[in-house]
Image 1: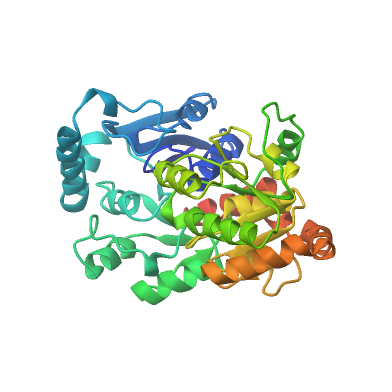
Image 2: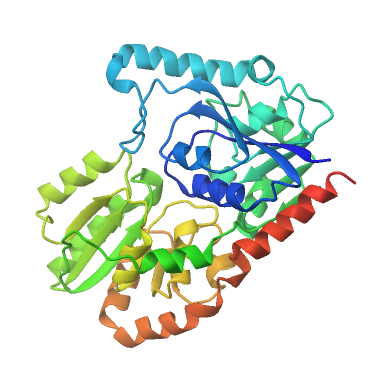
Length: 395
């Protein structure tokens, strides 16, 4: 008999976690599992991908009455006032914070064998308060929760700890994420590390697609991919770019992605006359062709859990420079053999990027060494590991 599986996410907006979910849903054995995807908010550009996967059921709690970024093309924000949106948003957070069990009971009638909160915070609180007491529950932690506050979801640290104590298994996507989770919560039993799955074959195939639009290309081309959000550090990447130009070091920045920070970044580009050397490409269903066409891949993030885009850049044998965030050592190793990992500060990003731009031999060194770092993330390998995890919960 098939195991009934509920996988919960917050939305299906553009993001690394959502891409990982799509990968999993496509590859999981539908003969073995009866799978339902629950999106707390019915919103996001990846929704159509989910609906196109055979034998996957889809549920949601809330319709999307607020818009968080330009990629949320189904949002109804334009139909309501800012004041109305604010009221809806506060009511939504109030219910999530104080009445998660009510939300679950009202919206979920089916009984599942395994319930997975595929994201920390809101999603974990909902699944922790499942009214199905007999289901096995898994919390998937994708970020450094020690340095993120969730006051809009948890009433206290004790509330957050009690939430995670209700899970049979805590899955952390990197050793750093596990360390921070255990340090913050004090929970150490049933906490494991499970790398995210990457479809290596698909990435390589898509990277060969021709770029049709005209792109800026002055000097060394540096590509970044991800949401235009404060956490991704694109503001400091542009400051580094500006400083390098003032030192007569030619370079071009391509940023692939959309998000709340777009207007701020556009304003910075205009105010500092960077229109000829910075290109905000926007959302692309195929970012890999841009990564392949660039000379360097940069991750300027302030915080990560296990960077999907860094793994994808490694798959494409790109010279990589990244700030030291959670998961980078798991991906790239603990020294500078495979990539340039710099302390998480704007100055260090500047020094590292300058070094990599000016040293073509160093770029070639990283390009050669990065080749053997990604096999452990291959989706076929990871799916087998996740399958064993799900089987173990039934024992």
